[in-house]
Image (cartoon, rainbow, N blue to C red):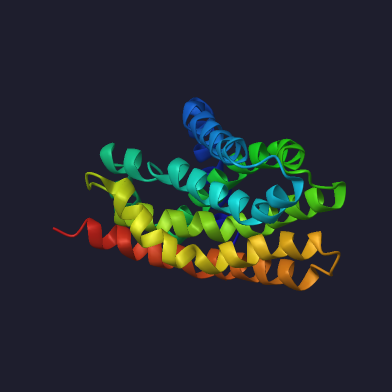
Length: 226
């Protein structure tokens, strides 16, 4: 157990260092998120009620697409540099390595999303409570979303035009998360309890973190079979 935890921490540290050195990908996804959110209000009538109505679904769709963009090359560099082959022949737990990689990627992308919450609140006239609920939905729902992105990224390793393939695979799988994520913010706008929705988002994330690493590891093994 101790050696597995040490391996997990070491892999997380490695992935965080890689993310820091390639911060341009994080900047690209954040800029995409902001452009996506700014485009729609500018093309609509300046009505607060209309903006607040479309805000939950629009924000979560922007989060989905920005995470898809940031996860497109999640395994590509490891594939091109032969790191995946080293994972397979090392005898170490491949699901554990995958979990550490995805969680480190999530932690690195989480902070900008939380920092942008006040700007989103200002753009769509959200109250302080609604902004807090939005931050909680991001905190509880994005892990499952990123694990799904990692799964489809593993399918797209070594394939040209993988962005199109990732979108086609991901959108149906992410639909429940989009529904409950946007629904939580909608419920908060109606001054209703949101604990049940947050619990469902957290449960989805825990299930995804528990099971999807094994699916991702299986895809990686299959992709390296001659």
